[in-house]
Image (cartoon, helix red, strand yellow):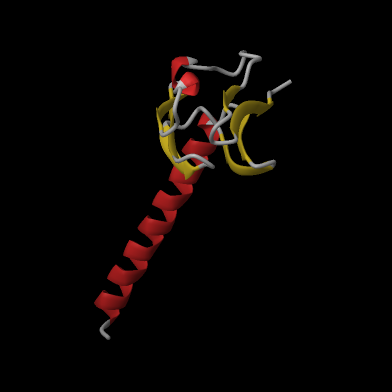
Length: 116
């Protein structure tokens, strides 16, 4: 390899490392300090920070469930169960005390930790 090629590769690697570091720093600044747990059959299968918009999909005792997280709130977007009560519970936030519960799927979504 020529000296120019080695310098170009080193610059690209340094830029990539800096970009990854900046993404990690800015992502950490957005963290809310709230942890929401998704429990299935007495074990936690997901934990998420509602500051990050995302969808989670899992399969319960009865069928599939999709949890949507957006703007520091979460709700059951889709569910395969006979009554869809968990879908009708609507959006929950860090200050809501009632968990979202889907009894046919044996899934509970609740706030696990709040910042002090």
